[in-house]
Image (cartoon, rainbow, N blue to C red; front, side):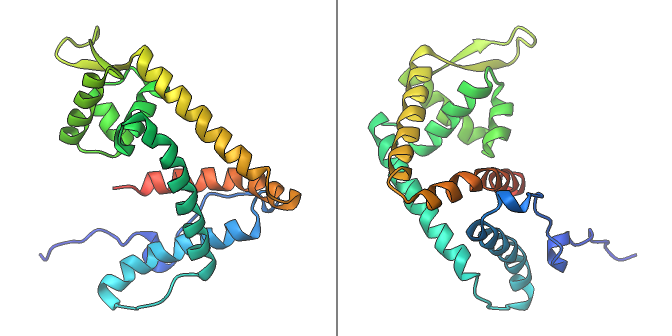
Length: 198
C-alpha cells in the first residue's frame, strides 16, 4: 500500500479562517491587510507547487511598510538597553508569565531549547534573569526575572507607549479614532500569526 499523506490544510483551498471581528471594530485599511495576510499564506503554499507568481494586495504592502517603520522607531528605544530584540522578548515573557521552566519559555518564544538556553544565560549574566531551583522537580530549574530585569521591562514598556502616544496625538482626530478602533483586530491578527509560527 502506498504512502498516505495528511490532508491538505484549509488554506490550500482558499478557506483560511480569520478570527471574527465586528465591522465597527475593523477599519477598512485593517480589513485590507487581513485579506492580504490570508492571500499571502495561501499563495506561499500554492506557489511552491504551481509557481503562480501573483502580487500581494497593495493595501497589505502599505500596512506592512507602516508597521515596519513603527517597529524600527520602537527598536531605537530598545537599543539603549544594550539587549538584543530576542533578549528583550524573552525577558518580557518571563516578566509577564514567570517563573517558567526553560521548555515552557522556549515554546512561548517559538525558539529551540538550545538557543533559549543561550539567551537565558546571557540575561542571567547581565543580571536581568536568574535561575532558581524548581520545588516541584529538582531535576529542572525555573527562570525568573530579577528586580533589574523588571525595571528594564517596565521602563521600555513605558517609553514605547509614550512614544506611540506622542505620535498618535499629532494625527487628525479621525485617524486617531481609526487606529484605536483597529487595536482589537490587530491583537487578533497577532494571535493568529503566533499560532501559525513554526
